[in-house]
Length: 290
Image (tube, rainbow, N blue to C red; front, side, top):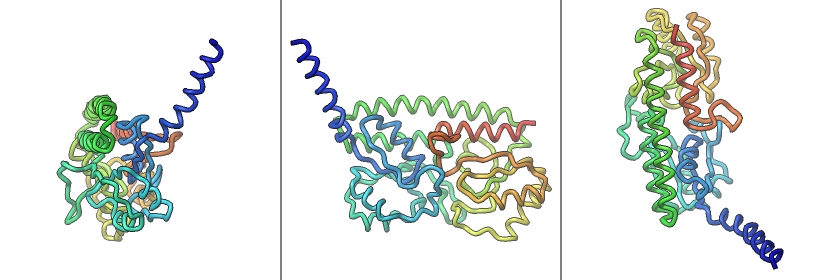
């Protein structure tokens, strides 16, 4: 009898696992950083698909037919907004999706670069908390039965982000004020600069699709020499030849690689948002603290 009861219990466990997987809410996030936010809030109650994966550039993404199918199957689509996903209308039309769309930057006052909104709001950890709250609210609306799980996960993750924000501020405080100025590839760190007081100067605009002129490069080279800017930084999503040229012509050291618009794979240096921010601040302080 005991053997029979044990067999019944084992059978129940084996059959329950696939059912639980099938019950997970199917969420599509536009790029890897959003995918990480969704996973932290959703936990094992969601199945997250990311359109623009690790080490890929969301600015130049071209939707594929397989992506339209992913969006068509989604119960919720999570996007950044602020003009980041310029390809989204075409993808939605191709997919025929009727899924609700949550704009994770809702409630964040955008920075402006000329007439363009800066979409990189996640570079401020305080803003990242707004992303998480918006995502949590959207998951609760999409799957009310798991509302308490989502809210609990969100609160735990928000506490980690609070600690991360303090960590960044303490690290920046160690950098001499006259050395808090660097060169990066494109204007991806405006929100980080506004929040933490390190000035970023970039030859490219808010999108990696923008073109850099010889005049812009010459201006930056002059600025580096005049202001004695100590370091230039590469980005994981960008060709590094321009930055290496600027480094060679000015003598400013290459301070390392920053992660701007994308996480890495699991075995990389920045597989999660928290890892990304910690990597970036370690890279910056290593180059800027004498």
